[in-house]
Image (cartoon, rainbow, N blue to C red; front, side, top):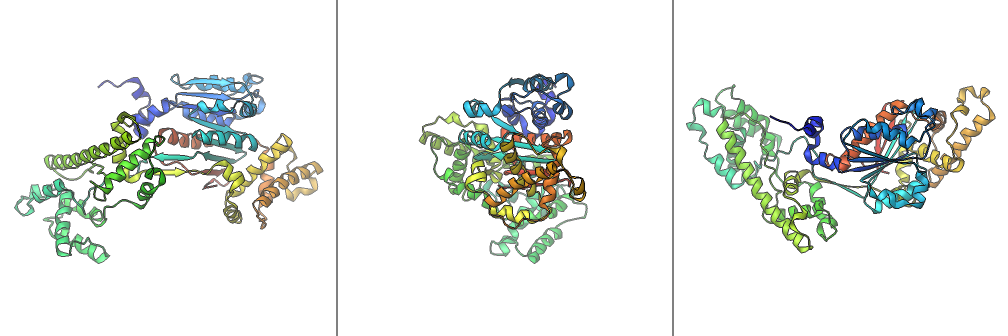
Length: 536
């Protein structure tokens, strides 16, 4: 069998996000603001799986610190433009990816040519002060472009995702099996009734699919219990005893499978609360010409559930492996697949009606999109993020931050210090100087300059806490201020690599619209080897 070179090259990742995810990657345009060590590690982990192109925006010249912390820079590059240097080296990783650079000051670009960033699929911002970051985030928010804000300072890593709404169809749950044992559709019910267990010889009896076994005895149970499923632990035990009693010998694996999967018969098939919330969402209720394909499909499935589906989602159509002879397994598989195809056809008709009502052609949503949505309808997700303006200005999570801060093991302290350091930098055009760090126990050796540096950063910390109306300041905060001073705003190669993997993974989730991304902030403490996520 001939396999094309691209499939060979990307074989492992195609198993993760399939051809549709790979196509989304190959069509993406990623922008990195500042070619820091962390930024380069993120791009490395995006270039290798094959994004379409990347652009590095950075005016800085490579210095000794860059050469010492970035895997992509060495002493021969010192004095050259950092954006050009890292772009040339990153391009060597994958000939399929195009690399560009812009040797301009990112802050000046944000102030004077903000629309430059609107051409990209994703923007990654590293080492951008608070004011220009707010301006950039608002522009990208309005343009519906995800922004990933990334920082590493010493052993601390920080990621914030800013994006209005992220919708996911292929969330990749452990299983999408939907057997409808409690509410079998007509073809499945008829197929189960054709199996006469008593007249079978031992060979045939040992190859009855467990789905048929459960359907037969669940039907018998419901006849004896006014149509009710087993609900109490005693009833569930009785139901299993009913199956066990009809087992001819202990070697019948199919009956063992039926007992192991009996819980499927106890579980009522219904639309989950999470999916029902999506159906009730105003974006699903009011479809217009600006609605995304996700919301149009969600509305079509909602209409199906309310009408032809009789309260149930479209059938996924997947059948698990089980002990059965080939003919019966294929027959069962065919029944489920035919029902799934019939449901998809009905949803497709609802999609066409909706598209026609808003003046769009039917090819706006392709058949494979409808197929995928119906198959994964039970697991779709909508994530709505908070804007950076809400977090910083209009609605900071004051009470939550106060509560988290009182726990000396909580990583929220690093968020406070990163915010304080940004203000320190904005006022002084530098980070706290590592050379002036002092340890409290050695205060007799500390210079006045070192004490001043610590107190200056602490001032910005106190200003932030005052803005958040946090008055109960824990004692452990000073220890962390000392530590962040010692870091001096520096990056470490190992932390850059770790954040590169974490952030690139989240970016791939957004580009492919597969798997469930974090919402919205992640902080990693490399000293304690702990990570935390927050909605800030």
